[in-house]
Structures are given as C-alpha cells and as structure tokens.
Image (cartoon, rainbow, N blue to C red; front, top):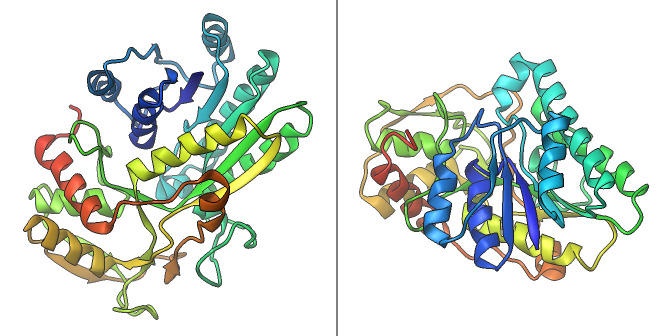
Amino acid sequence: MTILVTGGAGYIGSHTCIELLNQGHKVVVVDNLVNSHSESLQRVEELTGKNIPFYAVDLSNEAEITKVFSEHSIEAVIHFAGLKAVGESVKQPIRYYDNNIRSTLVLCKLMQSFSVKHLVFSSSATVYGLAESNPIPETAPLSATNPYGRTKLFIEYILNDWITTFDGASVALLRYFNPVGAHASGRIGEDPQGIPNNLMPYITQVAAVRREKLSIFGNDYDTVDGTGVRDYIHVVDLAMGHVKALDALIHLTGSHVYNLGTGNGTSVLELVQAFQQATGQPIPYEISARRPGDVATCFADSSKAERELNWKAVRGIVEMCRDSWKWQKENPNGYK
C-alpha cells in the first residue's frame, strides 16, 4: 500500500517509516519540520534503500495537502503531525489547539474527498489524565491535565464522530506511553530542540557532558524508591505497533483504541541505574521538587493490542538505554 505519514520526519514517524518500508509498503511524508529534520528521511532512505516522496508543508495548508493526495494513490494515513511539548502547551494553549486540531480537520476532509478510508492516529496516555489505578486499560476514564493532552483527547472525539459518517472507514487510536531508544544502527533517533522535555534524551546529554546533571522531580512518591514510575517503550516496538494497527484496519470498520506500552513500570532512578550499567556512563543527578500534575505511577495494560493486533513490546530497558546512547554518541549534535 501507499501510506501517507504526517509528521514522518519526526522521532516516532521516521522509525515507523523504516518499518513500513521494510514491510513492503510505499511511504509519502508530509512534515513542516518545526520539530524535526529532513535529514532523518535521508537516513531512512539510506537504511532501507527505498525512496520517500517528501513534502515540506504544513498539514493545515489545505491547498498543498490536496496536491499530495492528487499526486499519489494514497490508501491509508498514519497521523503523527502535531505540537507535542506539555510545558509549551501550557504557555501557548491557543497555538496548540489551533495547530493540532485544525490540521487534523483538514486531513479528515481530504481523506474523505479522496476516499482514503484507513487512519492510524498517534494519541497518547495523557488522555487518561491522573489515572487512579495501574495498569491502565483502554476503558479507564478519560481526562487531561494540560492543553497538549486535551488536543489528543479532542482529536479522539473528532475522529470517533467523523468515522461514523464515512462508510467503510476505520481508525485506530493508539495511546502510547513513554517512547525511548533509537534505531539499532544509530542513524536515526530522538533529536529534541533546546532543552529536552523527555527523560531519556536528557540522560544521554548528561552522559555526553552536554548538560551538567539530571534533575529528578520528586523522590517522595509512593513507589519503589520514591521517584515517579512510567512505562518506557522502545521506539522500534512502538513503530511496529503502528504497522500492526494498519494491517488490522484494512479488515475493520469503525473506531478502535489500543494502548501501546510494555505493561511494566520503571522508576526514574531505576532507569538512571539501568543506563549507567548498560553504558558505563555516570549520570550525576539532583532531587528537585515535584512538578504540578505529575502522578506517582503510570503504566499500560496492553493486552488488547496483543490479543487483537498480535503485537507486543519485546525490547527491554537495557536495549533502550544502549540504543539511546549509541544514537547520542554517533550524533553528538543530533541531525545538525
């Protein structure tokens, strides 16, 4: 099939492009490069030996996206494009609502116009808000504690409404937890702009002496060592989850939601210790105050994805740490 991947030059998008190409699909990418680099797609082409038509345009530009649909026989869409920093969304909520929701509306309109009936959406565990119990199943109550999370939740509602008006169409809402790691080649990985918002790239930058030390926000939670517990999933496992969801959608109609995680919780200190053991690199850290809105524990019940998609995360914490460090070592300045 020919798959349109929005945000395909980004961290998760580029890894998913590799897995799609390796499975024999053709890939077309749209990405405005606000939080990504076109170099990632050049490296995907290098790793796979396949060509990727690339459009450096904003997904909300209906005229330009219409051209993309007109020039390719697109059969399905994987939708990653969107602003994604929680802290930034709190400071710039209107920008997040406008960008993430408006671009999705344009995409839905054009998919229906061109009769493209299958959509995999990059959602997030943030739609569970302050979950009261773990592991979290897909049936848990939905809420959100920040504008970024609310854009994901609102888009889920939009897609659920839209799909009922589109005969024969199907959508997969993939709620994933904490992506980490990098491609085993070390050629593509997470390349945050400025100060990393996520834990693993901050750890690798401390290991590379780009940053002095790691700040751990809170050590008085009711967890194994007092630090927050999260479900870290290797980005390649996550990418394969998108491929499996796409394979399933071809035979389905309506809306289907899946958690993508390992089902295991790892504390911040456990991740730091695993990184040090896996790489031999020391990670100096300090304990800071808790961040507002952070929960003590959050990890997935991914049994539905295993049951219905025949998907399961297979890479462990050590592999996540080793691959993240290899990416950092071989690309000390990211894609620049």
